[in-house]
Image: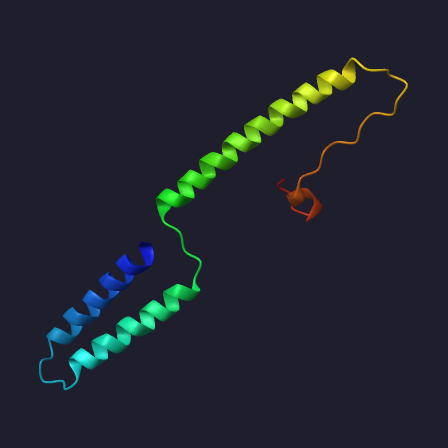
Length: 103
């Protein structure tokens, strides 16, 4: 899990920093508090691993491709129907509805 790996890495770095100063009292307690603080902070964040991100990106790409295929098919079906009907309005995405100029 990304949270635990990152917490362990940061905790290890703090430990190395503190190990250079053996004269400091309460090093173990400080390390435990730092670990607890990091765990609390990262548990509130909505982080995903790179693998999870890539998997979701692939799903999105397949979904967009499927949508484009369906739009082409719908346009072909509408093209074969009675032309006296008003042309269908283009399908807008949620991003376009939200005002995203790049959508």
